[in-house]
Length: 441
Image (tube, rainbow, N blue to C red):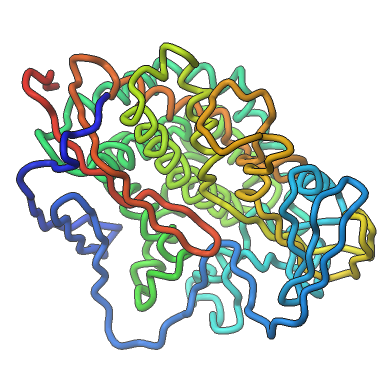
């Protein structure tokens, strides 16, 4: 896979269409190399979703900098504790005092500040379905159900179970790459639909639902990034669609290990909780995997000889170390503690700067790209909140990058376009063109 000469991709294309979500159609517009969901809604008050892992802005007080025993810097900023050093970040991610809950609430009765607030959400709907903010706040990383649900989900996400999907994932990657047009956007034309295909295979969702599932996943993700304001009704339809998909998975005669785990969750905590688990797995799994694949493609375009010096998985890990999709994670202290070498009161917020820790020169040396590094980056987290889908994400990234790197694919990507917010890094577009003689599926 080599970069396109001059960064160009040739002609521009435009397509307009509709992706149905149950009885509601989400209009979308694809212009050139970027796919943008365009929501048509009446002038209703916005629900006011905030981005994933966004904390409330507070008046910034004077900085208080302290060195912990590990020698890493912890600073007090805007009434939050900021952790930037690798060693202290490891402590923060593993320490049981630091939980996913809003300030002033315990893990048992609280909801996470990383999730959209319910203050403007209104009541549940008349048909018994939760409102969209209530649905988001029922996700399993929040509150006392986290440990139990993660324990159930850990089994289908175990390495030996994920390995069963290696052949399927490789074939899905090959099919998506072989269907690429002569030029376009690698993110929208390949990486996003490929990751959704893989998510459907892992859960047992019928392949015929891929287009609708992709539209729903992108809209739900957009809600977290605060770019789905005014899309109240489409979001409600997305929630109901996911509930119908979950119902199918719960009643299917045969299913994947993940579908079996969802059945366990439904039996213990109810079918809406199982639906919320599915939504979180899709939203937290597709976009970061797409970003990781795009980052890896960028590195291979810069240095096509990389695969001769390191496995693709190591190359992907190094790309994600340098640019983690979630550069910061938020925690709240469940009780007063001194776990970071300073006294932190109960209910105070701790922001772990993953990107800074991944660049700590004491651990990773200089800033050059080096997939031979042995130190473990913190991209996928540690401890109780370690990413369940890390192995599956690595498998997908390796498979699609390998498919794109085949000589017969002849895919030449140009510059990667990233969207950075305070809390996420998202691959939005990567123009490409296929050189002469490319294979077509």
